[in-house]
Amino acid sequence: MTARPSTVTATVRSNEPVNDTVANATYPEQAARLVAGIDQDPWGSVRPSLYETARVVSAAPWLSGEQRRIAYLLNAQAPDGSWGEGPERYRLLPTLSAVEAALALLGRGGMSEETTRRLTTAVDSGLAALRALPSAGPWPDTAAAEILVPGLVAKIHERLTHVGDDRTPVVGDWRPGPAPALPGGYDQSVPGYLARRYASAGSLPVKLHHTFEGVAGYIPGALIPDGPDLLGSSPAATAARAAVSHEPSAGTVAALEAVAERYSGLFPEAAPILVFERLWVAAALAGVDLPPTSVPTVRAWATDLYDPRGVRGAPGLMTDADDTAMAVLVSSLVGLDHTPEPLDLFHNGSHYDCYIGEDTGSVTANAHALHALGSYLRHHPEAQHTYGPRADKLSDWLVGQQRPEGPWPDKWHASPYYATARCVAALSRHGGDRAATAVGTAVAWTLDTQRDDGSWGIWGGTTEETAYAARILLATADPRPRHLRALDLAETYLNEGAGSGEHPALWHDKTLYAPGAMIEAEVLAVRELLRTRHGTAWPGAGRPHPTTREGRTDT
Image (cartoon, rainbow, N blue to C red; front, side):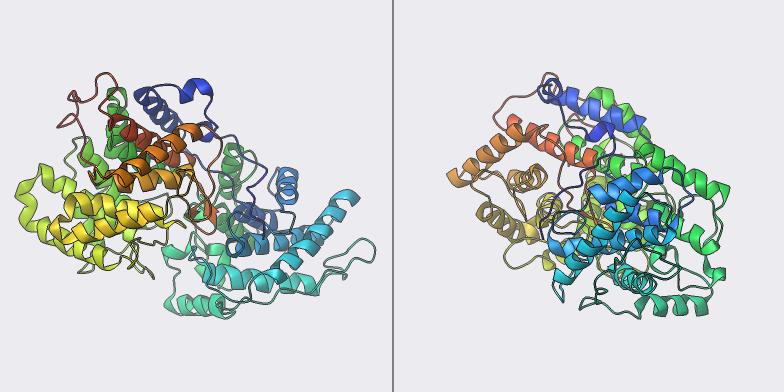
């Protein structure tokens, strides 16, 4: 299928294309501007999600602004009938979501003849696109796909059964094509099985709140989570909770309307993302030089976000090792004495689970944990007897997860360049001699996979992945011509691409998404590292920051 980005983008202050004035500003000016913009935005820089918006359309007809969402749904369909971003296998879930939402709209009726015609056409081409997908996996390891895909296939079958009767009246003699088959690799019984399992236990685990829409139609009323706010920080989950509760509470309506107002009537897959965004941006910028004017803001972020009970990426989510590790790391980088003790909650003996009850591990979460431990030990050598052996064991585990050809994969990102950059950053600084071969193999793989235009990318060259790849190469001081030329080409590509538009969606949630400010911070930081490797620096670089232990941070 032809991948194309959504044609509708919410107004996002920190994810707008950078104009010439901003692009030509110095690193400290751009970094300070980015930090200030994030500090003023309580929601986060991310585009709306087709999947999530379609779920709200289907489950919340009572929510104001539906015409905006219907237009988005119709305009975002690709010429081949699919919806979503990325390669065809990533478009399965968004297309299922959009087709089901269009059928829900047709069932409600009350629309103009033109809108009805466009919806029936969208359903026809969407069903054709689903039939054209591969019949079996492997499918992307996105959040709760094993629940969401079977649930949507079942909903589409049910809605198609009623086309033409009083539940789904249609205009003229329109009849849709065949219902989609459940793709190979998925099990139709999974949503019901989970519902029965947790019904017998008497409660629904918090880890299912973010994807509650996948089990909403299967669980008994006693298991419906309480609360007026966003369930699991997910608009889709919140709308599904209201639908199975039969009447939305005033708090639920207010929560969804607040998100819709921020994202121009549409919905991202998680809201807000400020914890995740602030920690990742701070770590990226502090790895170069955090502008002195931004240090108080970042210190305030770290003070607010660090929690001895573990950090959660957004309200309503479980505490997790990834955000906890980054809170520890950022705290260390800006001179705050926050210990790594909260990470102990997630240690399983050899490495860290992202959260309690995790099904598949994450190398990036563990790379962040190693980085946090190493940074803390650098400033607190007296803690070596406690955290030194754990860091050594973690280094060994990370090395063992590397693919033979050099990269690391990870469940939170479609591109191996992200995970490999994170692992190389941690192992090159804190892995010791045991990690040297792994780092060298990763560097060789990176050199071998550079594109002719100087970029890197799993599906095509991107500034985001090029920034990660350049980070991998910058981790070693290799003076050989091939290494230096690769960095020169990367620098040219990144400089020419600065401010050129929105970033492709490469991050994994329920579907692909792009956290704009975080990507901008990575690209900005690497461009500065590439520039300063020539021996120049921005005025004031290297002078001790009054609020940090040392002038240059140690990421």
